Structure formats: structure tokens, C-alpha cells
Length: 326
Image (cartoon, rainbow, N blue to C red; front, side, top):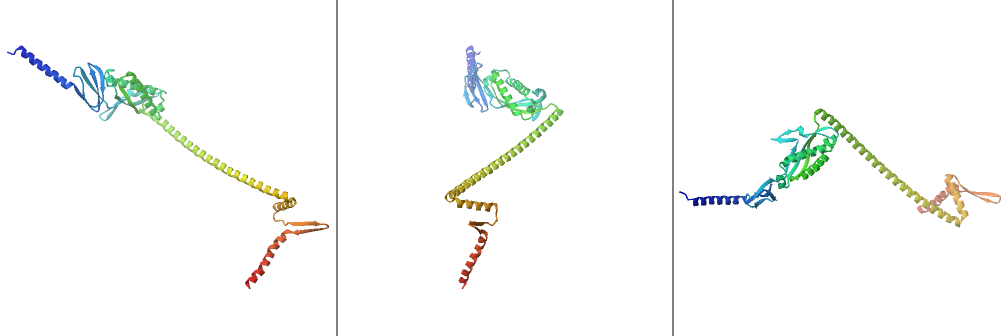
């Protein structure tokens, strides 16, 4: 018969082995590079661990560890991709724009966990809160936007506003989540007839923009040509101005010289001016110098003398050439 003391001894050894096993296996833990951990002391959040590697803690049940992923998650709003196939939820994405049109808007939200303690214990279902906040943010921004902006060039602005509003809501909810990005996937009209009509309107708008750009280009071209002509006219005017100034200066210099000659010999200068003026007024006319000496008028024909002067010079040169030949 086994004694009571031996039973107590065996039970004590079993308990000791169990305690040592618990201590041995619960005083250390590892954190992967893609993970982050939070330490709980009697259920209270103490600290977060983000560095990968081997770490130590107090044994269970004093301290425990909760691990969460550090990866970036994607929230698909309005559709879901399963096994390579996309399942759409039009009731979730149907919303009214600011100009009272109906559109279907799909959205993808990139998010990650930045505070594991808050993510685990500040809300029962933080993913559901994120989905509801995404729906509220998207509907709020689409509801204040026009349909043209939602379907064409205003998507980037809508994405920015949705991200800002969603980040504000998530910060208020304090669930340890950070919004990294918001991307509109598809924004379309609810039926084919409306979609076709809007496509025609969009094409017309694109044609209008193209024509407007061409007109603006033509306008700029003509403005540049006009500016070039203006500069050319200004340059020619400046050159003509300079030429006239120089001509005027030359005329003044000639006048000053003529005035000085006039002061020295007024009679001769006067006669010279009369003769030069006659030559300018009556070009090709023969001029005679006449002298009134008492009762007889004597005149000297200047032009014949000028015509005979070259002949006399030729006659003087001829004998000289003949003597040279001898």
C-alpha cells in the first residue's frame, strides 16, 4: 500500500514539473519581421514590440503576448475578389452626387495597424468600423461633388478629400489604424442608356477642350507674330531716327561751314549759292556769267568752255605722245 507521504511527494513533483514547464515555455517569445507584438500584464497592455527577434517576459499567467501583422491591408469597398473573380455589391456603392445624379463608386483603402493595443482592445471589430467610416466618407464627398468631377477629371481631388475625411474619423475612433492611401477603382453610371448619354457629353466636352486649345495656340502664335512685327517696326523706326539725327547733324555742320565762309566773303558766297541753286532747280541748263561794263554787256558762256577744255587737253597730250614714239 502506497503511503500518503509518497503520494504528496509525487504530486508535488508533478506540479513542480508543470510549473517549470510553463515557466520554460512562456518566458520567451519571438517576433517575426512581418509581425509586431504587445505584452499584456494580467490583461493590461504594457508595451508594444516592433523589433524582430527573441524577447523575454514574465511567465504565464502573469504576462502574455498578442501578435499582429505589420503588413499593409486592403479594404475593398463595393466589390470583393475571390479566387481570381470579382464579386460586385452595387447596393453598397450606389450613391447620389451633389447635382442629384446616381453613380456607382468602388473604392480601395490601404491601411495598417500602428498601435496593436488600441487595435485589440479599443473596439470589438475595428475592421467593421473602418468599413463603415469608409462608406460614410465616400458618400459624404460624392454627395458634395458633381457627376462630371466624379466620372472624369475630378477623381484625384475626390480621392484626396475621402482620404482626409477618413483619416480624421479613424483618428477620432482611436482604434490604432493608419490610412495609407485611397484609390477609386470604378465610378460609373447605373445603366447603359445613361452611360451612353454621358459618354456623348464627355466626347463633346473633349472636342470643345481640343478646339479651345487649338484656338489658344493660334492666338498665342498670332500674338507672338504681332510682337515680332512690333519689335521690327520699332527697330526700323529707331534706325530711321538715328539716320535722320545724323543727317541733321551733317546739315548743321555744312551750314556752319557755309556761314563761316559767308562771313569771310559774303558776295562770293552769295553768288556761289545762287549758281548752285540754279543747278539744282534747272539741271542741265547752260549758265552764262555776264558783266555789265558801262554801255556794253559782256557775258561768258561757261558750258562751252567746259566742253572745250577736255579737247584742248587731248591736243596737248597728242604731240607729247608723238614725240615719245620718235
